[in-house]
Every structure is written in C-alpha cells, then in structure tokens.
Length: 57
Image (tube, rainbow, N blue to C red; front, side, top):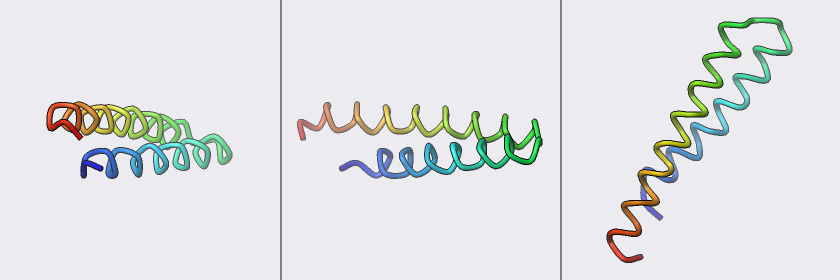
C-alpha cells in the first residue's frame, strides 16, 4: 500500500473526528476545518491509489 494512501486515510478519520467535535460544541470554524481536512485526505488517498495503479501493484 502506498504511503499516500495510508496518510490520506488517517487524515480522513482525523477530519471526521474534528468535524464531529466542532459540531458537538457548536464551533463552526472547527467543523469546517474538519471537513477541509477530510477532503484533503480523500485527495491524498486518491493520489496514492493512482500511484499504485501506475506501478502495477
């Protein structure tokens, strides 16, 4: 598994957690930061997937 996929997946989880905490405490900024981090993690995960496809794994 490509390093980018692992890091991307971790960012998705962290972003979901951050968003949930922000929503629970009513912090819109924290909630939006979590959503942004989640999207960034999904992009990084996709990049890792493309790398794996190119390498033929």
